[in-house]
Image (cartoon, rainbow, N blue to C red; front, side, top):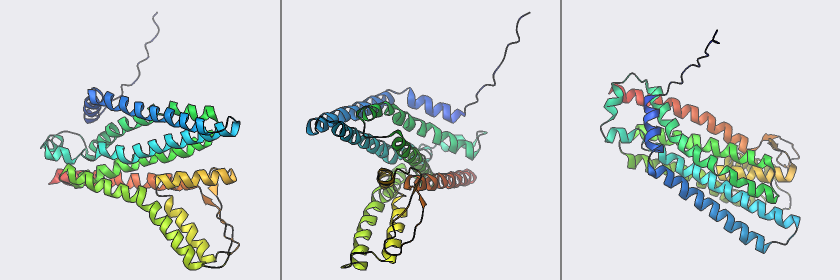
Length: 305
């Protein structure tokens, strides 16, 4: 007797997802973008390695310093990719359908607003994740040189993936509210620039100003200054750049990955808080869920118009 044939359930893909992914991955532009991106990142990494290696002593500590420089460069490139490239793929996902008068075609299908939004998000985010995963082998150069622990890569990956998801959903929500792709793109990048770059700059200026105002001459800080410094630390956790920098600094100083304890020199209090990268990951995931729900509601309203 023949053994019974085991049939696995077929994986049903959304028609929009299949169409978007097929059109994106079969085009020559996708392979060109991937090739150029990897060539630029790998070429700059090798160049940075050579410059750092020539300027560092031939010791274990010198090799570790070179590995740290390469690691932070690769992390910075991934943060830029997640913050400024991921929104570009979703900024016109809905508004472009309305400009091309093809949104009415989606309205007559059996797809729900949630399925439309989910398919648009995954198809755009999939290519971003492909670019992110393609650069992961380059981190082996940093680990080979030393000076970097695998736990530091956990910090970077949590921030990068949470940022890519949140900023992609932010662009998708703005795209659902905008009538033109240009307006959606400009609004998205204005918000992203304010979060990624504006928050660290404002925190740096605020910290310097408050430090001079509250403790101009005394050697010890006041309880109010300690509280303000803690609030600034929580604020910079909302930016991927400053969150990674602060988390890496706390990890290097204390060896703690998940938590950090601010030093209240003025009041003597001890308070343990989650690491900045955990704060960013949690806030971004919650914001992503809210943005997804708002986008689905907005698409449903467009269908009813």
